[in-house]
Length: 247
Image 1 (cartoon, one colour):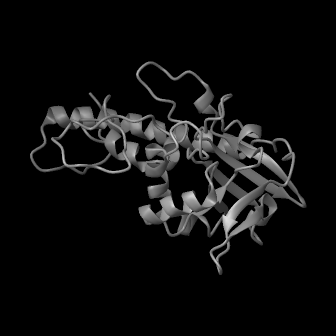
Image 2: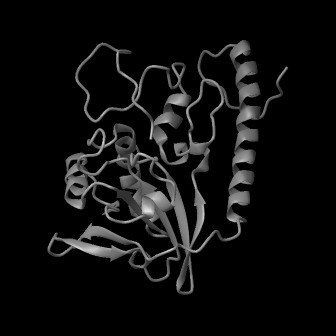
Image 3: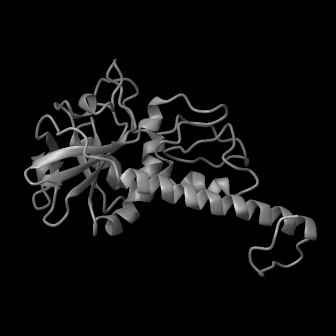
């Protein structure tokens, strides 16, 4: 019998439910402990390699709204020596499936609100191969206000940091960089993406920044096998959504 870990109870619950819930609570506590242990291990990582070049991204000037070159080093504000970059799957013109990725869009839909808070501690941006005008237009349509958007077109950033396939298709990779003096070093990337996932699972390499799945994981339906986020939703019967490739 699972031991009581607290004294709270909910209306109408049975003894069977409470036993099962306490057993689950033990697992949740162990998961919390393991999550913190992994975070501590991540924080203890030595610096990775120095970035090979000061990448010349394209952004939009805040005043004139015209495209402008933004060096990677420019992304580090005073007093903030960490940069979080999310590689958004939005191909350049002429590349396969030239629309913005629904899964990446779902991620940034959530991160945009959090970016206002995250940016108090570190620098954060989303970077895509698409021209900056197309990326910004997509962001405006989604109502993004806080996340910085950049284009990596005409740079080797995506290829250098394994955020593109051999045929040039973009990949959804999160990466962290640190500034040490005048040098910028790679710290971490979501390398779970490159590993074969366990049976019945997706890569889940960027689930840490994607609350959609964390909410669904707490429901009886779970993530499901045939559903994924879309750019727009038409009215349909429950359970008939199509699953998209996850970012």
